[in-house]
Length: 613
Image 1 (cartoon, rainbow, N blue to C red):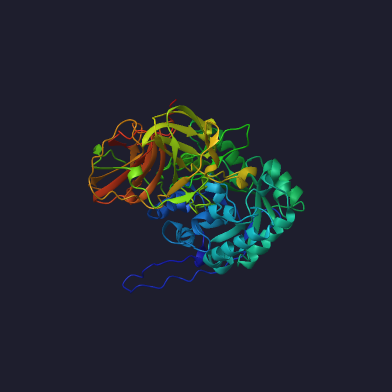
Image 2 (tube, rainbow, N blue to C red):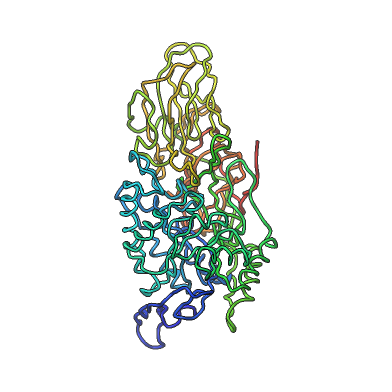
């Protein structure tokens, strides 16, 4: 067994009462000249990445069992700052955010853990894992020695240490190694900053093996002398040896911290898939060389609760918000089922298992089903359900309103009559524009749209601009330019608009439509909320078919399933069986641009590769 006598068990001796679980025994995990050493004996880590917030907690164990069945002996996960400290000093390690429970469960399933506790994670995650409120501190600069950043980061890391430091291998837990920063060489080269990170980790109780990881071209900039430099994005043993030797006193061991079996998707571009046959030779070469590897991702899951990130590389590039599915064309699909890539990788890994080791049988695929078409019974115009307003002469950003995610409605009154040009500098990231409650157009940051011609009726006109945060930038130099909403100004025929009222719509919990209502809905109506109930005989995976809808968000039984958008490539939303109930269930949709849509179908399979104009 992987954990030997140290694994916690709950076995019952025949005819006896319950036995106390064996107390986990501490181990040593050290660096040898060529291999990692567990209690002085070589250990080749064959690891796969999966992220606890992207998987329903009720399904964690099933996914970990799948990791064992593919032949993994280790799993890796980031720790997400914005998940655990959503507001300053308010920590959340409960429910789907209980990272310690996830780590303990991995140990119960006989898996080691490589921990990647931020401060920055990238991960196609909102703001790269940073909490939005860091932007409200004047002068704060992430990924630097700036004192305000260091103070906030220190407090957070201490909270993480209380949860996870006791679970290091030297304390009887499964955590073998802990990563310091994340691909820092792609961002900067401040060795004093990296040394400060190391010190903060140690002060937070992480007293075991620390390491850095960087892409091939950035290893020299991102490693910290004295720590093992892991290499990302290569499966060439000679290149791995050269980079590690050059930055680690001519010695190993050798660890590919991120080996990519495919890639992620963003709205309006093709779904990324790569055949397993393009990757099995590289996996074979790394394992044959005795090197350790972590595949990113083994299982992607779904990015829910407005937590998708975005890429942006400056004025010569487009803003690229990522989709809700994090399927990643990984060995496990979004629902946690084995793919052909899983079976191909399992076949490679089997060749390098210790003598006499036999892999568990591959669990059968989870069933999925089609439910009867749903017709919505409750409807509300979003503009009829606004909270109290915040008034200001100029528009305020999400951050100034102390709102992390979701939507903000900006409202002012303008003089009507004729055709005028509305210009917003800058809209971040998607805006629905309404005149007297009727939708007249949209603005999309992806397409660099910032102006719209409005035909205004005579008299005083109510102008509404509903702005959606489509995801803060998660990679690169623009991390510090991540405010949302109307971030500068709005003008009408060149005259700046003032006298704004702003309505925060964070949707941090599912909206409730308690009474059936039948407002008059037309194609030009504003955004609507629709809700209904549906019955399930046996909770089973299903996929909401959003192809008839436009753009919005869906909740099932209070769970935010993510965003949908007709442009694709993702056209379905995965509904885990674990979040359905036998009997009555509820579904609520916020629809921005097709308010007349009133039925919802399901499928027994996802559609992740359908683009539309």
